[in-house]
Image 1: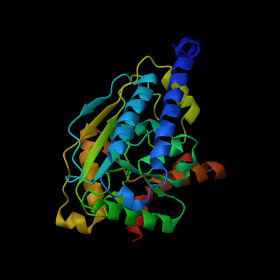
Image 2: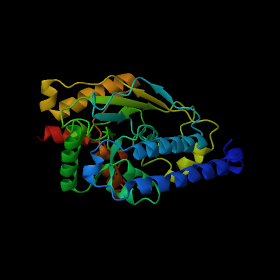
Image 3: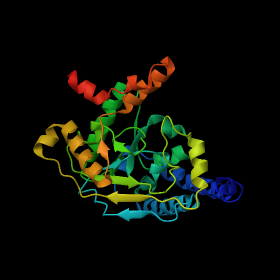
Length: 298
């Protein structure tokens, strides 16, 4: 199948997907020009609403060209007044951008992403919160910005956050970072599923590279994706005071919906695993569950 699709449908799909992305770029670029923060906090103007509709339609055509013929949505997306933050998991691939392009919610993502040609302009259009994972001060500013937006009484769009902070293979939910839970406001958990028989979606540090994943996915006749909006989670007073407890309880709810377990592995464990590979140490020496280690050390 891969050989047949590579010679037939793959180049057609790749062309149309790229064309749709290029078609979206001028709309996003013009709409983002000269936007001041004060303007971004105002209700959308009529022309910006039209651009939103056009871009959502173009993005849907892009996913259609990639073989995502229909997107199964379960549950109801909460209004911004009901939940200012959407927590999405598991995070396993750049194809997780599908719910972002469907909702045009703001996102928290790596600062380097804004420099990606074409895609970076589309990202900036949805007013993201950029974070540098290597800069501790950037993390603090990111948390403050999330809190400011979440407590703005609907002046900002909803924020969509992938609390795992890195891609996994979806077999379990790793430790949620507390950034989405520090504001202490209600969140809506959103779970993602890719029920294809052959998994070409997962993008992890030991798996296929980004281009290989794109090639294999476009060579599938059909790619399935399910997006389920779970009920809004309203934190207790104890959870408002303890973001880690809040994050763990939301993770438990999402894991139950997915039918998977939870683990205390984090992005830092991935970094340790990479260091282990460079030092040629036994593969099990990096399996520390970094979050659990930090808690035990206080």
